[in-house]
Length: 266
Length: 266
DNA sequence: TAGTGGTCTAGACCACTCG
DNA sequence: GAGTGGTCTAGACCACTAA
Image (cartoon, rainbow over all chains, first blue to last red; front, side, top):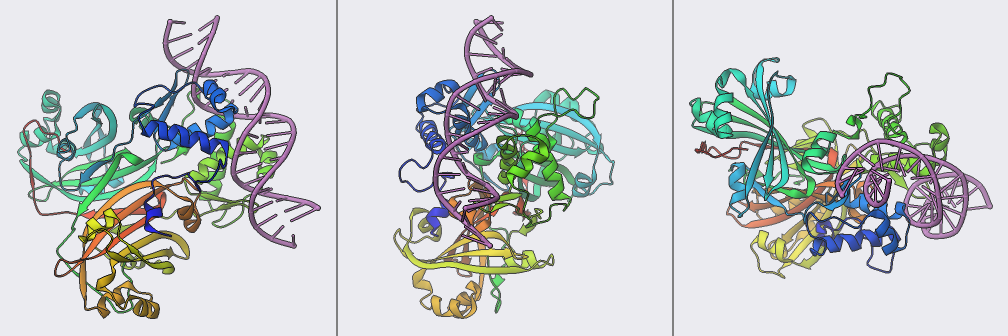
């Protein structure tokens, strides 16, 4: 296998020979029409019935193609309404160590924020461990949806030890900025302590806010921030549509690995 | 997270036999049987026809459930043979900056390697840029499948500037170790310069070697290694089944971010 | 109320694998 | 040749949305 094949973005496409199967033809046709902006972002596709006529197949065959495109995040269906082009998937580069907003705006894109919920809860095992506080410590839980160029692109949920930020609500209500909350409480500087990348599949809620199909694959990021004295101040959990993001991690350290006899480096 | 968490909207009715929808019931049933090891890893499921009888539905309904489980990497179908449980998905932690093998063996797992191909090619634009060599420079392309506990888990393709490793084949043939090739050519130490995490969907080839369904979501990692003098010696491209891996990136730098008025930190 | 997508049925033919 | 999964047909009923 060549590297080209590893990098090939086309998933379902097999040999470029003649029509392998009707649904694959429909898949490829619609996909290229979306990518060529022939079906522009946000536009509504012809109804399934109309697509049946166009391609001379039954609904189940059309739906097979639509389902694959939904899984990839290119289409989103709304029951009783229609099927819509979700986005010509751009891929935003997120460089670890930079602020979210700097990553995006540096490329000329605009960032928006919707605060979905703010609540107080008792920390569960995992966030408690990450924040180095006892379980059931009171935490502020804030869920926000980040929009890039007005497209819902990143769903984020932060947990902050409540004791550290007694005036969270007032400050956040005024500025909608967690950074401002930090500053207000005397934290002028902080750093990312660790980032973890995993993945999964969209729950109903995630799918709804991100405009994805339920069960669509997601990239999940989890990180911990600490202030300059090493206090853990934030546990953050977020998810992206699979195709929407590329994480860039610069050189993790200046340590060199010594090659080992008989070892294998990956 | 998975489709398992889908809640039926009209679940207010108390009759215990309330079926949300047949395919979702089948999905959940099979999924729990796999996770509970009732259907052990590697075992063959009853044929679709048998599942139809068991659940009293038609094949299309059974297949709807099987398709979702294939997409998640829990099942893999082999035409003309049957449907098999792929794995009770473990999640391997890969910490950036460590060697591949150290990451895995530290947790007590075993690592194996299958060399799939070795060839010489001319560098395409992207690897050439990453390696800081002109396009069409001769590179050694080596594709390997890494097995963890005898399960194909990581597909990796490295590109090395051919001029730097004139005796690649002889050394690699002897030891099957890229590290040994480095040492043989006087490179005793090297470091990861950058790592990028993206994702995508399995091509036919990737699906075949990883035992996944075509189009199943993948995590892709791309990295560049350099020697102690800063020469780029390796461009590496790999992919994992979505649920098989968690990437851990420790504190990227000691630089602190100053909170910015009106800024938002993500 | 008309149109949409979500689901399901009961068949069918095919390519593939294996004994 | 028997059994398997992959695909497709031509219907059907439902829940949902919008005019």
